[in-house]
Amino acid sequence: MGKFQMSEEDKENLRNKMCQAIGVFCDDIQSKGEEQVTVGLEELEKNFNEASLEAIFAQCQDNNQESNSLLPEQQQELRNRIYSGVHPEHEGPGFTGQKPGPEKDFKQKGLHHMSPACLTEAQKPGESFCDRVLRLFQKMLQRLRKTWQAVLAWVQEKLAFLLSTVQFIFSEIKSFYFNVAEFFSSSFQV
Image 1 (cartoon, rainbow, N blue to C red):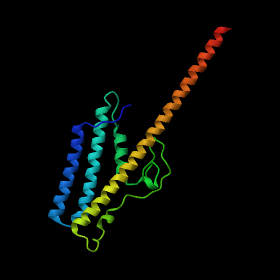
Image 2 (cartoon, rainbow, N blue to C red):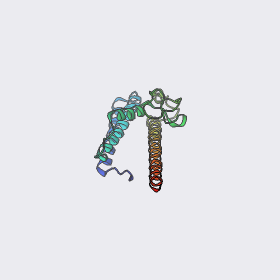
Image 3 (cartoon, rainbow, N blue to C red):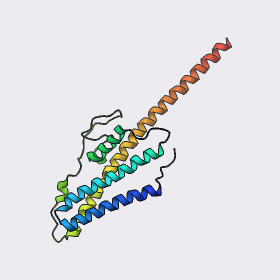
Image 4 (cartoon, one colour):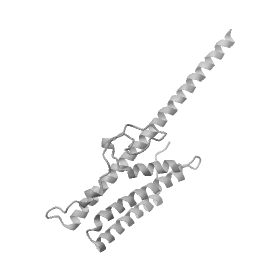
């Protein structure tokens, strides 16, 4: 299995979608003012997540010509994990509020996604509007990083479980093959 490589065209497409989302956010807060910061950041976060998911789904489809790409159920499960907003520092690879799937799910407890209320924090004394927007934007980026870090941990856990299962089955097949070969060789020596 080789290292993942995203084409330059796909990278540029993802960057363009993210830059467009930032442009829309900036236009909205310029034209509509401070009351749009919270709504704009929520929409920006959603747009970043959607652009990232689209890139993942497209890559899976492009790189899996001989097998199925991500099934609709897997795509939905990944989407649910992105939007569930539980982060790994208080959580195993499972997520609060989700029904266990066919994969190994873990006892779930955790910290829920930072609510939009954290985005409506009052402006700090002496903080300009631009400084406030930048501070809230940085918090949104931290949430995105934590969310995608949690998804990465979940995917790694799923793949590790699958890998260990296949390794176990393979060792059982080798053992069976060895035992049968030994049985036949001893049978013919009599």
